[in-house]
Length: 69
Image 1: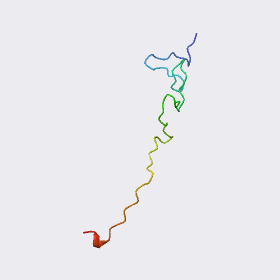
Image 2: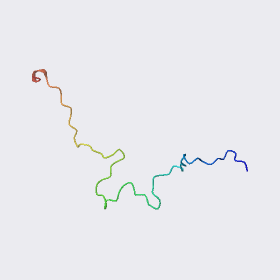
Image 3: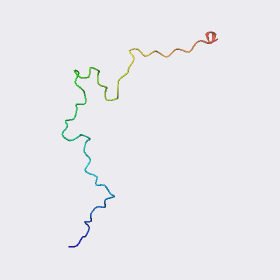
Image 4: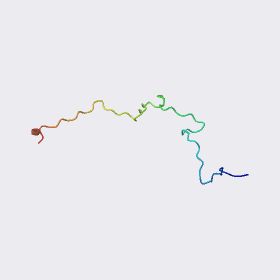
């Protein structure tokens, strides 16, 4: 029997299986948005928690030269 191109993999080279989603076997993946009964906090948006002030303070106009002292 001729061992051509098929060689056994050396033990120092780990065999990497096909990439799969990180889901433990025999476990159902949790939904991205938790049910409100368990977590009353609103889930963050796609860009993270949305923190937007109701009124952003307007830029203060530059003081006139006579009031700058």
